[in-house]
Image: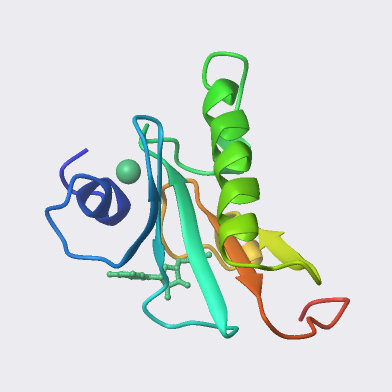
Length: 113
Ligand code: 5GP
Ligand code: ZN
C-alpha cells in the first residue's frame, strides 16, 4: 500500500523517530503528541482499522500488544498508561491504517472527549 502514510513510515520511506521495530510491528513518536510520552504502534501489515480485524489478521494485533508491553516497560511507564485506537469518522481516525496510541507520563482523564 504505497499510498498509505503509515505503510510508508513503516517502510522507512517517510522519516520517523522509532521506539520499537520488529518484523511485525513498528512504533514511532507521534508528530503531534497528546501526552509527554506518545507513541503510535502499528502492525506492518496494512489493516484499515479495528473494524477490519478478523481471524485472518488478528495475530498482528497480539504482536502489537506484546510490543506495547515492552515499550511501556522500557519507557518506565510504571504508574500506568493508556492505549487508544480510533475508528472511523466518529472515532476520530485520521489515518486509515490500524494504529494504537500509547500515551503516558501524565494523569489521563476519563472519560475521554
Ligand atoms: P488518528 O487521528 O488516526 O487516531 O491518529 C493518527 C496520528 O498520527 C495522529 O496522532 C497524528 O498526530 C499522527 N501523525 C499523522 N501524520 C504523521 C506523520 O507524518 N508522522 C508521525 N510521526 N505521526 C503522524
Ligand atoms: Zn497502511
